[in-house]
Image 1: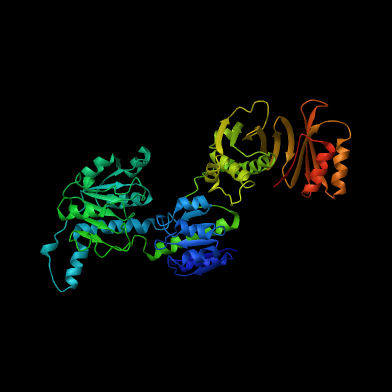
Image 2: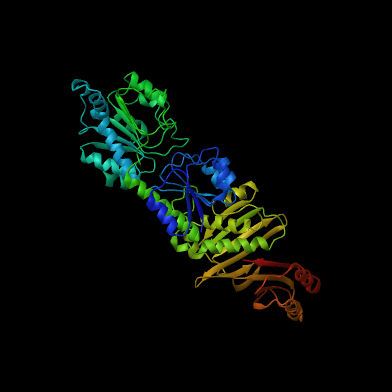
Length: 523
């Protein structure tokens, strides 16, 4: 059971979903000053757009806070970099408000062309005025969409049905998708110049900040209008106000702003050719239920078995064909770092055979997680493993080859230390991890429990010696694996034990059998 704080409200369906899974849900409006003092008592945090999840909040939540969910799409109110550094998963609900945001965009397009809000306000004030509100049809006009994702695609389909020609700028738009949507893909400059309406559907990033500014507005038609139901800050609001006042463009319709709530002295307030709404894109009853249940499902999956859904700060996309090797990589990393007594400087993850056909970068991160878990005080997971490794100067590399060479090892890890290199390798055999290589030794050992690894000069009586020591300590040997390179040379012995070996027993083994190496591994 997890304890989850909900600060900006959540639909009852989502709260019920969390509660039915056994979690304690606390719904409480919390000020920015109060949140750092409370967050350390919770495992999860659900927010919308109001709560600012800053680096200070995330630091105050450590080490208990494990996941932050945004009941919506945009996460610009969450410091995702700080969350990543702290190993906190950040998830959103990218699909729940697609239709609502798209429909609000469509509504804003029509409202801007037909002066609907302005006419409504004047009529409510007691004036019947038809002449001041002559509008324009959208049929036959060109709609330019910047960002043709799910929301932009839905807008395109509906406005095509309304008779608009649609062009788009999206650097990730494939030719096939553009053809399916009957959309012409063009450079940004051409979309701005050719469109009668520009609608924005991109995230707020350093690249998109002030994307629409006075310079770009001057490239648009004087009769053009711009609509933004995406994120505030994509349009430079001062520049837009100038363009609207000076007739550089004909109109605008905005649902999002750089500062929310919109400042009372904003130059956009009161402009007759600018429709503004208070961030209503996702404000439908249907969307609120969808994003809440989507976030609840994500939290339930995470707390049940660690499954991460819709994460914005976890860039691991694992092909289902090699999903089982994530655990293999983590266990091999754990075993390898427990076998070295020098600081880890580098870790190479090598894939062979069929495994090499897939993207193995996630396996490298999993191996890092396994290794760092034994050498770091902080909690290590798939989110922050690479960040911690970078801070510690540990280099991660991956390589792949479909050639298995002479060994059947599918996944091998090589650790680099000040004194040299050490290798461990293994494969999944019938769903079970078997360690098949340890440095230059070939072995075949199913992984589990506690391992005792000894390398010594092979000679008669050794098995009896360490068997007696372990027996006297009441430590049972479940399995024994021996690897040798040459007869009567060095031998590598790995014992699978039912219990861990205490430090005094390890010291006794060292003084009795005089091994070149002796260490214990626990999973």
